[in-house]
Image 1 (cartoon, rainbow, N blue to C red):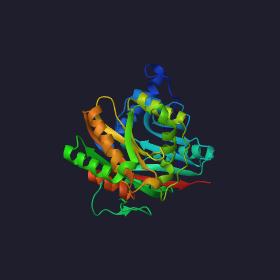
Image 2 (cartoon, rainbow, N blue to C red):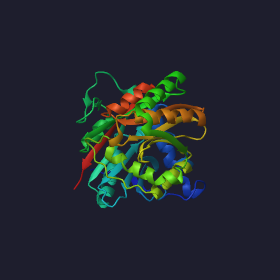
Image 3 (cartoon, rainbow, N blue to C red):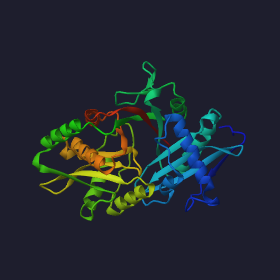
Image 4 (cartoon, helix red, strand yellow):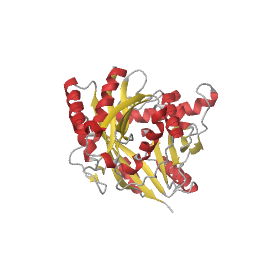
Length: 364
């Protein structure tokens, strides 16, 4: 790959705190990524303060993150983040590459991706995931598509992001559908969904939840439930490492989200005869209202067919209305082939927000 005149790549030094000379580069990087997000989505949905972003860059017990940033003639124009799951048998890594729109087409993205792939190889990983995003407003009917092996949708073949991924040897493994639910939900619709799901679940299941921290008596069972997320979710076409979850890891993630100003609101379903937790859903609720993100929703395979996914989601949305009446919408992401969960989302009134391409590459 030819060198890009005036381009330098440097590793990010994560500051201990925000404020002062030591955090200036980190703040510059966050501002750059925020600008890229606004350019792509046309809103501030994924704009974060440096204070909110810093906790995710600090050392974590379950994930290593290495970041390099690019300067062109002294101006910051892009970055690559390499994320490494720290399970003993992990073979995967994730690369996140972004370049400011005005600097694209000069080889900067290729240089950043090459640096990321070098980091992955040095880390002994063999499978790379990376992502491209397509807001709903950018999707045009009749456009040529690149499709994964499974799922009804494809991503635009003429998108520069799609062409970039293909030209660097990545294949489209899976599409995630991003969906948006305006809030508040109509009270009658929410009540009807709760009644329908409660009737289907019957007396063998009970639903309860928590805010910020799982109760001590349930944290071990919740860790076991979270471990099922990488095993029980649709994953055709993509590689996922099994995740090891312990109570300590649950607490670490809870504290990370609290430090970000986006604590978890979680609802679980418990199988009464065994006492096991068998389904959960969580929302990250930002301080000050506005957009809420739904991260996980899972029903373990042995307990599917009882409307538990609908039940925990409905209960959590009802609790959200009580906790944060200022919330205006929920964003959620689901594998495009996950017909059951997408049907549940449709029943709530979720609408298309965008598509995310999960691209895969195997390296020696």
